[in-house]
Amino acid sequence: MRFSLLSIGAALGLFAFVSATRAGDPQQRKFTWHHSYQAALAEAKQTGRPIFLEFRCAP
Amino acid sequence: MSHYVLARVTTLTGIDIALFDFDRHNALYYFILNAEEHIYLRYGGRDAASAMTYLNLDSLELALRQGLEQHALYEAGQLPQPAKPEPLYPKDIRSLNEAVIKRGHCVECHLVGDYRVTEREAAGTLNKLTDMFVYPDIRTLGIALDVPKGLRVAEANRHAGEAGMKAGDVITAFNGHAVITFGDLQYRLQQVPRTASSVGLTISRDGETHSIEITLPSQWWVTDLTHRYWTVDPLVFFKAVPLTAEAKTELKLPANGFASEVTEVDIDALLEGAHDLEEGDWIVSVNGEQEDSLTQDVITHIKLRHRAGDELKLGVIRAQQEIILPLKTKRQRFRKRE
View (tube, rainbow over the protein chains, first blue to last red):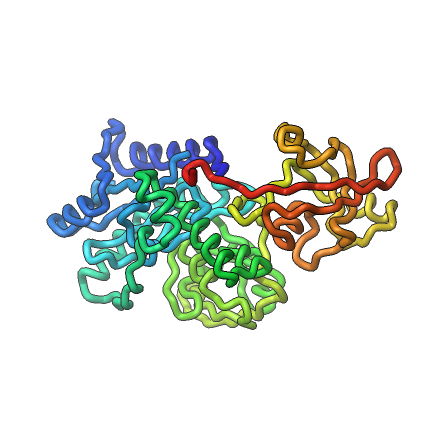
C-alpha cells in the first residue's frame, strides 16, 4: 500500500495540535496512549471515561 | 483529551474487525466508544484526491465534543443500544492467518481488505465491476459538506438538491441510522445495496427536523479508484492521464472513451519486460476496446476488466502513427505476504 507519508504526518500533526492547544493544555502536556486495546477497555471500565481509539496503519 | 482514554492500535491482530469495520484504505481512522464497546461515532474517511479531504482541525474538535455528549446520553440511558455484529478476527481469514499472522507479521489495515478480496477471487465470487468500488463518494449524490462543521451541508445540488436538501442543513440520520460525522455518513452509504434506488435522510434545519428521500443516480457507487491498490489489480508499470475532450475529437476517438496519455514509465517496465511504452504515447485501445461505461481512465479500465497477469494488446498512437504494443501485466505483491 502506497500510503502517503505526508498525509499521515499531516494528520498526526493535526491531532497533536488539537491535543495540545485546543483541549485546554497550553503547556503541551503529553497524553498517555495505550497501545493495547484491551488495556484501554479496562481503563474505560474503571474510570467510566469514553475511549478515543486510533487505528494507524504505519507505512 | 483528558476526558478520554486514549488508545492507538497499529496492528489489527486481535481486533474484532466486524465491530471496527472501516475503509481499509485509510492510513488513519478513529472511533469514539465506551467500555461496553458501544460506538458513538467514527472520525475518518477520505477521497481519491487526498487523505486529508475530510480530516480537519475544527471537525476533529467538534467530533471530540460530540463524543462526550453521546457518552453523557448513553450514561443517562438515552441512547438506543443496537446489537453488536458477530465477531470476526483477522485469524478467521484463512489466507491472512497463514501468510501473515502465523509468520508473526503485522496485520496492517489494508491487508485485511486485500486478503478478503483475494479469497473471493480464488472462490470465483469476486465481481470486480461492483466489488472494487467501496465507500462511495457523497458528492455523487450532490452533497458537499462544510467540512469544519461536521455534517453541515455547504452545497446541495443534483439529486440531493432535487430532494429538497439545502445549504446549511445538518444531516442527522441516514437510512434510519444516526450519523454525527463524515465517517458515519460514508460508512452508512457503503452499507447501501448497490441495487437500491433511493436513500432516506433526516436533516435539521432552523431547529426543525425534516425527512428527505434522495433518488440515487445510475451507478451511484462508482468512484475514483486511483488511490486504491489491491493484489487483484494488474500491475501495468506506467502512469497515464485521460486525453482531453479536444484531443479525443481531433483523433476521432469516442468522447466517453478511456484514451489516455502516458505520463510516466516505471523502471520496472524494463526490468520486467512489461512493455515498450514511452512518455507521451497515447493509448487509444486495449484489446480492441475503446470505451468502458465505468471509467474514462485506461489504467482503471485494465484494473476492472482484466486479471493480474493478463497479457494485453494496446493500441498506441506515437508520432502520429498507430501501432500495437503488447503489455504483460503482473500480480501485485505487498511486502508482508512473502
